[in-house]
Amino acid sequence: MSDTSLHCQRCRRGLAGRQSYTFRARGGSDGLRKCARCAVRHWPMLRRSLIASAVVGTALTALNQGDVILAGQLTGALAWKIPLTYCVPFLVATYGALSNNRS
Ligand SMILES: [Zn+2]
Image 1 (cartoon, rainbow, N blue to C red):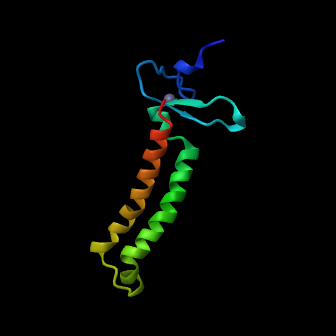
Image 2 (image 1 turned 90 degrees about the vertical axis):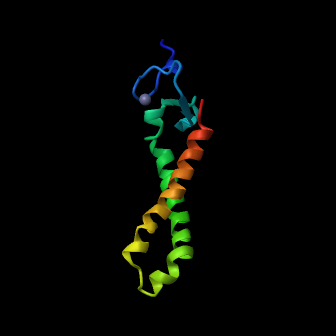
């Protein structure tokens, strides 16, 4: 029996001296420990961040650009702000999840 706490449970990379992240595993078993590279690709966390991005990004876009969009006056100078508006809550939610799951 090997000690899985010293290795990333996805890529098997050694975690000694490296930052690791522990995510809740399905079925109530011990947490799933991952290296930083695997943690940023942890699908349940990304899914939650995408949902937060969709909800908060849509609300912020409506608040900040809604009048211009509804008036049909959206220009290229403003259009680039919309994807950035969605990126902010995605990054905040992802950063928060990683901070909370740091081991
Ligand atoms: Zn890994």
